[in-house]
Length: 257
Length: 217
Image 1 (cartoon, each protein chain N blue to C red):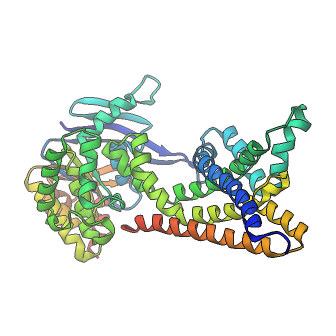
Image 2 (spheres, rainbow over the protein chains, first blue to last red; image 1 turned 180 degrees about the vertical axis):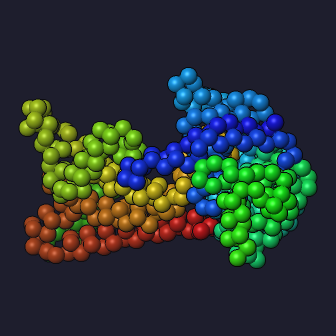
């Protein structure tokens, strides 16, 4: 088991509008080589779930394990306890995250965006990282843009660089937070193609997406979330073809229109 | 005009050195001090934040000339300390404290303009806080604040003349002395040319630095 999230509770404290209970006891397990798609309406908590898994948000209670090692546990008082920062950094080596807005470093060239963290965070030898980065760029069909800056690239190209940057850390699992939502339909295809290729190579991935045909074709499992809970999950053909829950049916109907 | 050109320029030249000293030392101290003030201003510990806010409000809300007088005479009136030989130090403290407040606010604006996604990307990639600041945030910060910093630095060149309030012999004070004694406007013309050239150099240098950051948007 690469990722194990158990009974995750997360609320956002808001002084004016009151607290917002975003995740209501969600559990998620991801096996090696699995491709999991998470679908659901806006505000259902899918992005928050990824942000909790990648430690961008701290959970209120629950458990998060990577490769059977606990990064977060819940104490007797029912409060989440994180491992020490130094250890947490080690846990971050397990995963990569691709953002909706790419979040490339604008002042670094494409190549440096990919190489900097492996060299300065993982302390790996420069030559080795360079070789790997060029290989990744070839895979992303971007080897000619190695010296370009993010602002010179299209959105689709930027997102592919972001994927390469995440892959350069050699993660065991890759998270995608709506990777094509900021892209024109024209550019969406080139990014989805890359993710599809990674799926064929048995890369473990969790993809939050609104691209239903893609989710159906590429993933081993689809999770439908709504209102901070998992409403339904299973084989994509079943969830899309014969949804059991009324809420799922309704959501998919809205999508087909 | 009775005073020879050369005598006048020589006297004013000495003043220019003093002016340059105020300018250089203020820039040297206030630019980094601004970072500290900005960090305190953004502190999560509220009292620190308030005190910094009050400090900035005073620095920006009162005339620099008055602040210089306070820094110079304050120790004497408050504690009865001797202020002999303290003049130049008071000037540098006064200028530095004032400009650091302005720089802090410029830095703060720059920091807040950097998208949160940059921090998040760095966080997920495992960069430490220090690495994130120096490798990811600072280079982008410098680019965004350069035009505002240029503005402040140019203002500082002209503000150095306020040191005359403490009877310090910077260039403009000397120009006024000569102008009064010789009943001539010429020293002021020389002063104007000096400030103009100095600021032209500042603007030129800053433009070159800005160009260095032009390679990305």
